Image 1 (tube, one colour):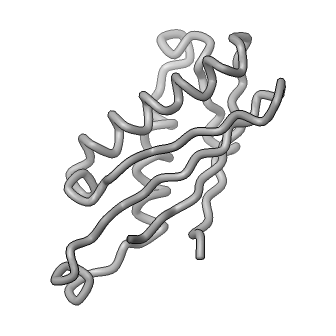
Image 2 (cartoon, helix red, strand yellow):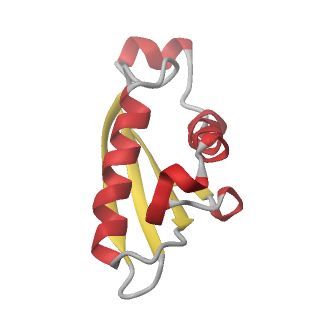
Image 3 (cartoon, rainbow, N blue to C red):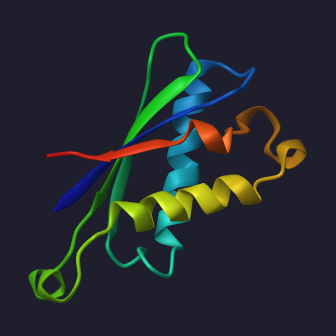
Length: 110
């Protein structure tokens, strides 16, 4: 397993509970459909931080042992898939769930 922890600040007028559940759906759909990462994506977990607009989330990718010999999970690839999604989002279409691309932070969990 190669878990990756990511946090982003969400600017939204909706409730914090919506942040977490909406982001869970976005992350799951995004990484399941990724050509580079979809076959390795296992799950996403989201955690909202009280009444703030910040949601933390953890992504889990599982590599078969034979794949680990041939490649490694790059945090940069995981980051860039989400970052590209954020840059492609339309603020008007995103409604209350617009995520500011510059708010994305990512680090690998050990």
